Length: 545
Image 1 (cartoon, rainbow, N blue to C red):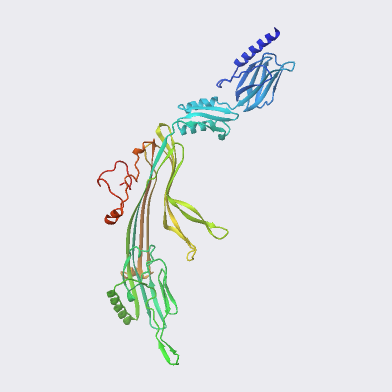
Image 2 (image 1 turned 90 degrees about the vertical axis):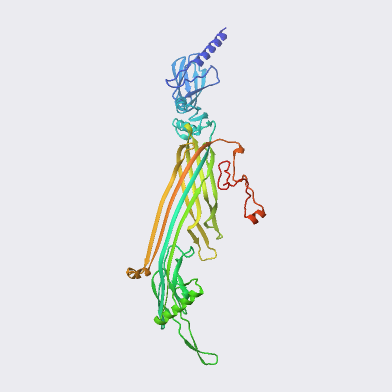
């Protein structure tokens, strides 16, 4: 009878222990079932909360293994309160007057998620996000409507822990959208180049030495290969102009005369008739050759102009004893360039995507142990990288980076010029933009632009003489260069969905290569079908047009 009474008392105590709990105001109530016995009972407590226990027998002592994690307070011989202090685990053992174990508890204290859960319900009302505390970390589970909502929940949870890395984000995004980004890079360049100048060479001498005066034009841009022309007069139709920026030289008997890019006077030894003896010992006079001009580059003239030039030059040289030549140079160029790049790229919501249409060129980086040149490859062309995040209301947050680059001779250089192992490296013209913007689906925004105007004008002249009226223009040359550039970068994001393959159109649709007979007889590269003026069925590009 006594044993059955004790069993009934223990059952009642277990029921009371399971039902009696207490917690501070504003904190979720924690419940745990405990019973008498040697096996410890597990209790989960949020930090800063308490747990009340009614014992079936009077308790004499309370032992807590780690008081820094939890405390046990004895209010009466049969009522105790366990308080969670900091995240961790500890044991609490309750003993009677005989030293026997009345109750053994395993207490686990976590960071507490009640306040965090309430905050998540307010900031993400449409999602089903749950927070669970494990020691001093927080695990987020459930579903979010968008990656932006999931990221926002992670930022909120980071405010409830000691460090952001203690937040474990396991939220799944429901119905991830796909975003297609269309980028347009449009650039228009205009340039104008004008050159006008008079170059001359004069050589005078009748003795041991001859004296020459040379004045070539010095232009920053070589106009001759591009169609520059001049009205020239000179010895043997010689054209005195030097269209390039490099120095020009002509060999003399016994020395070399050089005309540099500037005005100068030069003294050149002339060859005279010398007397020598032949193999038989007789005296023989050998005539030398005299140089007509100190600096000249041969031009292209016809036979009649050569004859007239030779007669005029001989008459002028006979009367004055001087060889002279000159050239009036004139060059003008107007250029227009248009660059259009339209890369398109699609990515899943919240994921990054990259695109490059171009190539890679080698760039020397050094030498290895054997002296061989090591290279690395640098990409160029049309590149696009972006990361879309679809927000509430159909708005899209974009992190976009667009680049259009091309190889050019401007800015290039040569390593080891003049040697068999020389390497010429090209320059690179780059238009690059990196932005973070927010706009609706189908909206457009100009994220970058450039308006640039460059004007350069140079006048080279001979000091003093150039100030003379009329004649001063013969000792003056003008170089004028003007350039204008307009550049815009426009982005257009779209939220897209998959469609039927029948609705897709590619540049290769309907393209048929012409046969040999069509190519030879009619000059066709591809076969033509249908009416030539028939409009295309859908959106097309340059190849389909």
